[in-house]
Amino acid sequence: MLAYTEDFKNNIEDYDALIFTIWYHDIIYKSTKKDNEEKSAIFAKKRLKILNFDKKRLENVQKMIVSTKKHQVILDKNMDNAYLLDMDLSILGTDWKVYKNYTQQIRKEYKIYPDFMYKPGRKKVLTHFLERKTLYFTENFRSKYEKQARENLQKEIELL
Image 1 (cartoon, helix red, strand yellow):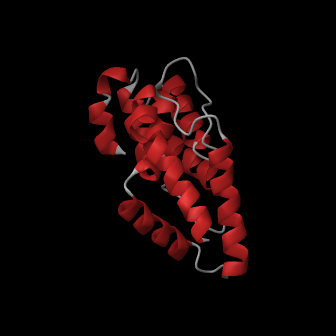
Image 2 (tube, one colour):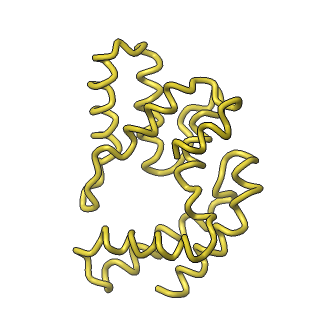
């Protein structure tokens, strides 16, 4: 994700806030928990306060971190939140070999769940994304990844 920020630096309004958001968005992660984003946002707030990060910018970082939970834009005054979410989902639009490796890593992450629990849950997540009008919020990512991402998600569903 950090590598993408350079590509789109001119499109980002608050570059530092976006960098901190990326850095902290998954800093707390446990596959069995449903509050990882909220905990990551709180952790980021504590750390960034030490750096005397501006209060409004800090709130934006927290909101963008939380936006990764449902992959919905919360802050829409600029495109920073949209770019964050698109960067986070960019893996979905990679070639099949890379995407397949990603799905294997996801399965390892959720290895505590047997297939009869994992597969329906995974299908639900993938179907949710496929039902969206677009997977990506920015034209840059839509034009580059949308078609391949949809093919990958559909193929994964068929293989589950």
